[in-house]
Amino acid sequence: MAAINVTVWNEYRHERHNEQVRGIYPEGIHNAIGGYLKSAGGFEVRTAVLDDPDHGLGDEVLNSTDVLIWWGHLAHGEVRDDIVEKVRTRVLDGMGLIVLHSGHASKIFESLLGTKTGALKWRDDGEKERIWVIEHGHPIADGLGEYIEIPKEEMYGERFEIPAPDELVFISWFEGGEVFRSGCCYRRGKGKLFYFRPGHETFPIYHQPEILMVIANAVRWAAPAVGAGAAYGRVAPLEPIGK
Image (cartoon, rainbow, N blue to C red):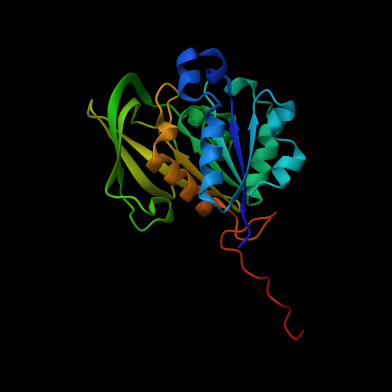
């Protein structure tokens, strides 16, 4: 089976300007995630950041990407509209998209879901979070127990202003009593989109094995069965009748 071509995109601002975040992710969040995927096997991984030419998402990159992972927070507004439209078109054509944490407010997430707010409750007190698995048979939950526990995390709470997910894999609970739809699957055109809530930059979320396992599972789920280098679930094309 051929490898899945993954591009891990990161705004890469916190790590460069915030000493605390740089201490947690000295090589950037994109390399923390990308490094895990490389070690897991079955993935060809490249990284891209906001300040790269074309945000690192030029035609050559996008056309050879099976699944794009997106992390942004401070600079959603700096992402060029023409690049967003190119990403949107690729998703509609079959590229998978994994949107992490505060990427709920990104232009690409809003464009694909048809919402301009993605509004939610939030509180950054470093609370315990339990991410409950509510669909154990879903491939994104493969290998997990009943829940993932994060010792300290930023709270996101309902109401989360998004369309109802096609499939809801995870629900989060926080010490303050709030709950949140934290693992949401969508299909847009030929592409699959997964929103995964954990990932506040001041906590070592992307060093936690269960979180990284979910991301890897989501990449496999979102990868197109047939496409530009896509491998997961690849099937041979049908022969014409009578050939």
